[in-house]
Length: 239
Image 1 (tube, one colour):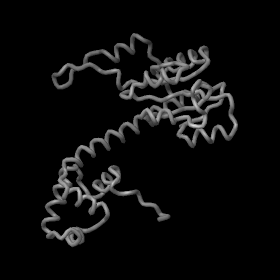
Image 2 (cartoon, helix red, strand yellow):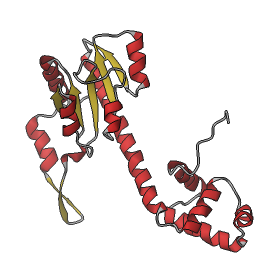
Image 3 (cartoon, helix red, strand yellow):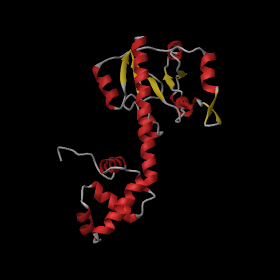
Image 4 (cartoon, rainbow, N blue to C red):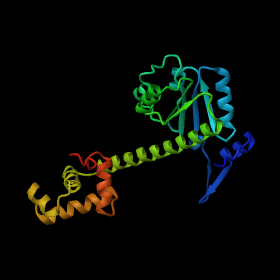
């Protein structure tokens, strides 16, 4: 993996150089620049991790206080969390429980000197993306960080897409929402008409409006949208 190291002056130019687009002057925002949160009780190690992360052009925030992280967290920025299990106030039985209660959803990389199987399994079950044993190999850590940031971008894209679908869904009339539900269940226009005591033509009109309002060009797209909205559960072969 190749890393491009930026010094502070070049990074500043990247973040604040005015860009002209279609005649409109805009400024690139730092909101798209990933930030790596580091919760590390050892101040010396925390500083070393910060310098390592910053050496590959990423921003870093370091603390030994979980509450400080919960306050400092910037939900608009791509991120990941490097978490030492020895952080004061962190219940090892629920590594990400505090994050979930605060509506924080970001990839977590767990670091610990204790590398027994039970601890690793518990951390992964609770949602940790990676589990690293200290002392951490620098290249391995950077690889994990880049992977976690990429995963966070994917999650953010999925959440944004679902929010867009929810906005579109609210523009549907109650009847159109009912039609969408039936279409997602695999019913034909004739079957929907029989179920809802409507004419075949009326169902066709409602279905066309649903496709238009939801922005679906094909039936498969509409079904994926219905699944994202929770109107249709993914197929489970055991059921």
